[in-house]
Image (cartoon, rainbow, N blue to C red):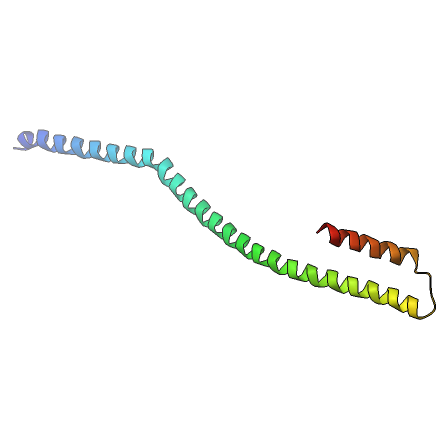
Length: 112
């Protein structure tokens, strides 16, 4: 009786072993794909984070332009005040450094 059933059990065990080997081979061959897929998703997340930070940086640069304009206007006002102060208090000669600064600033603003 056992000798009659033994070939069927052996065949079933061989089929199970073959299935296990094929499954292991499938997992082994699919591992590079799954690891690459994980790497791609993490890189996509990082790219999205970088794009968001770049958009925030662009907003910061827009605010920086307003700040630069305010500082330039303040510099012009201070230089004009110093020149007017020198003229009204008997100093007919403006310091060469102040005059050069005023001319440099005027040429810079004319270029823009």
